[in-house]
Length: 263
Image 1 (cartoon, one colour):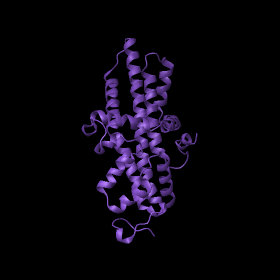
Image 2 (cartoon, rainbow, N blue to C red):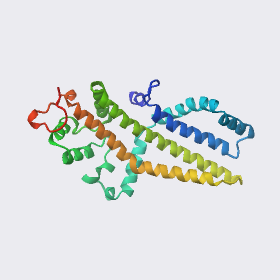
Image 3 (tube, helix red, strand yellow):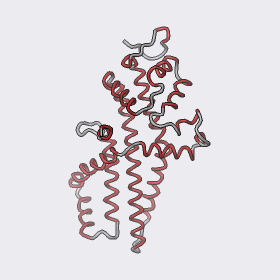
Image 4 (cartoon, helix red, strand yellow):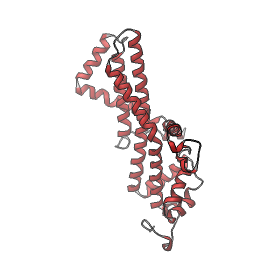
């Protein structure tokens, strides 16, 4: 129950508005458009939709609450679904990820928060103080609860770093919401096309273009979403290292090579 509540965005303030409202509004427009184009929709309903669309003030009055409501529903849906789908896509279509899991392609196999891949990056590409911090705090910990703990500690101790973490998380949530919105919109287009074909109504070129665009959008998300979430975790780790004193880790001056020493 608590985990479910954690995924419900707060109402009020500016946090979460973009990544919630934009996918929700996109989905709302597609649903309304599908209702309008269905051959089974009666004329009075079509006239009501046209009347709302012709009145910008009333259209805004309808779009804002219902678009935000749909956005909240999309926000509640688990980001793991597009994340796992992206990993599956990479394992089949990314050259480096094919042929089974290896050390150099664990980005396509490790589960969120991708600790094996983050560890590889830290050990091979970052200075020794960062490696020491990873070993002391992050090594062996791969649960979402641990990542939530890290974000909470950073947000309390360093508002600037917390803003960077939130921006990275917002991007992931926005793309996750758009994945669900695009998938649903594609289904609605397929339903409309099928209904029009069955009833002998012309499909039109626009619906074909929309369906193609939605498929391309979904494929683009599948090819990149795993990397975007990995970047989110990298930013969280960097924020944790910057505030390593909050985790009880102190680097001696002789070992110090990057960043500002803890006060």
